[in-house]
Image 1 (cartoon, rainbow, N blue to C red):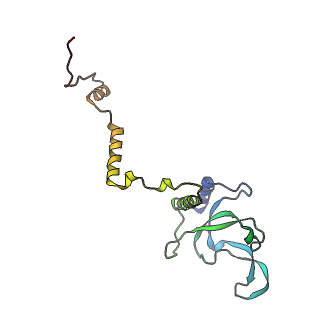
Image 2: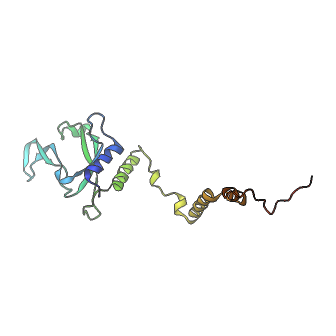
Image 3: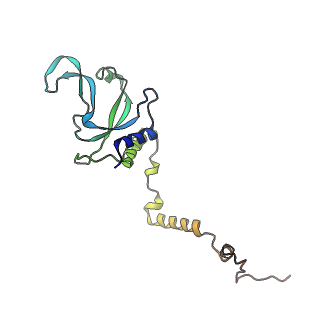
Length: 181
């Protein structure tokens, strides 16, 4: 398994960094370590405040012991008051877990697939590279692909080309008839 630092370096290399802040567009983080400062109306124990107050709270209290893929996004105007006028924020894209919410380690191919899928949904890139070609999915397609490969590899093999390749000179085919002049 690749380290989280290596995966984060790859994410920056493939998908870039914000031109204003220099922060990577995507990153992988440990959910338990993530906090944010926001306006809250009640304490963690449920006590209601008379006035909202700024507190540092767990960012992902619902994701425990998981890695999370985050994307740097612009905070919409209607949420800026809650996030204390923060202009950009990392928001979750994917939690590395299976269907039973058991943690799975982050791997590059899955991370890249998630980001590419996100970009395709946003209309920024195509998912064409992940679509199976008909030549790989049907029997006829596979047979056509095999024929194309054979033609590419062995397409010009004749007695003449074989003789030239083996430096035997030109071989006159049996079907050749000399015409009288």
